[in-house]
Amino acid sequence: QVQLVESGGGLVQPGGSLRLSCAASGSIFSINFMGWYRQAPGKERELVAGTGGGTTKYADSVKGRFTISRDYAKNAAFLEMNSLKPEDTAVYYCNLKAIRRSVGNFEVWGQGTLVTVSS
Image (cartoon, rainbow, N blue to C red; front, side, top):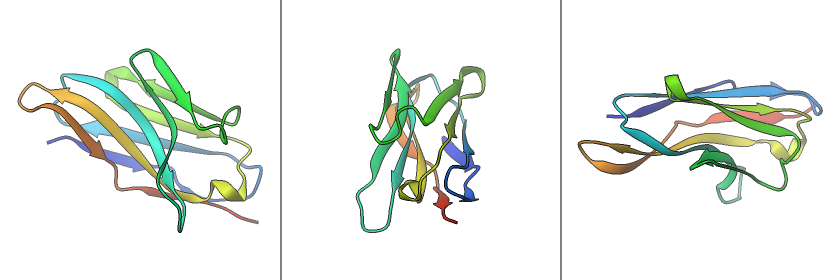
């Protein structure tokens, strides 16, 4: 079974930076997509940044401030967040869409990590 382990959330002042990490454990044949979503109180979960199939997507609200990167050898993804704003406050979830030989296509979510941007 594949699991995602996230780390790196916390409290930061406006204008500050944080780096989120997500590592997938278990047997994976290939990864189609790996990225980050977030959900703020009272709002729907939204895509923040994701990469797969040779393309990378960012939400308009984070373009130029957030950068997603991958460690393909370790099945890991990172989200570098700079110039953080109070509106970035949310629970951030890592998401993986991949293939296992035994089950074919599957999707898994991380447990979520809270990012709070406040002075």
